[in-house]
Image (tube, rainbow, N blue to C red):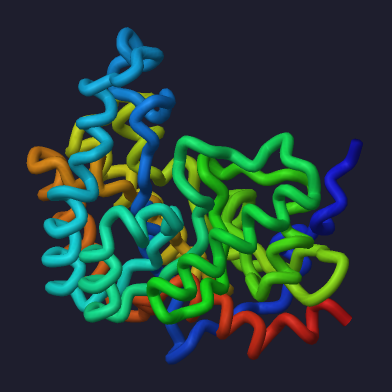
Length: 293
């Protein structure tokens, strides 16, 4: 079957995007703060023990993010005046409330990212998925004090009904499709929805865990991505999302390469250091109505 969520829209046929304050590039960090159930396999650094219950090797590796990595990241982003756009498992709200408390102090943005990263809604009936998503969004809103506007599925998963249900629940952008350098409209049964650019390649899990990048290679890839989009942004605005996980990038031996990359990016003029919420708000305000007529 064909994908009916969005139209094919060649970049060369789109209106010029004018970013705020004449910026060439909108740069934002998608920071995945997640909870994992102890008796289920998930993202692993060593597959040899991934099916064990419990699996201290892989669970402990993931658990480093909430215990240590996130606090290292808070210090780094604060130095650069960058606010994280947190893709948040709702289970984090009860399990690690101190993260929510400190993130609110930093004015971080909270997006819905499922209940935890051990459960996917794939295969759920529409009724079950609606109840599941309602619980996720309500939990995040009650804990953070803010209605989440954005969605990233655990492991970027959706059902064929997910965007429609999210729109009913007040979510108006998704990150899952990773197919563009600009926001664009998506089709939902009621309300409105857009895609905001995220990345599955400029993403620390595929880079380090799947491909075995070194810190130097990560730094170079991020800089190369930035340089290309920054150059193209002279013609029409571009968006660069950098997808990160505290148990990966904030390991001590990797963290300094992220710090170097942020030094490079923030050293350029005409870069809008922003959040996914602000990108969505700008696009809806300036372009959505005209491109959906």
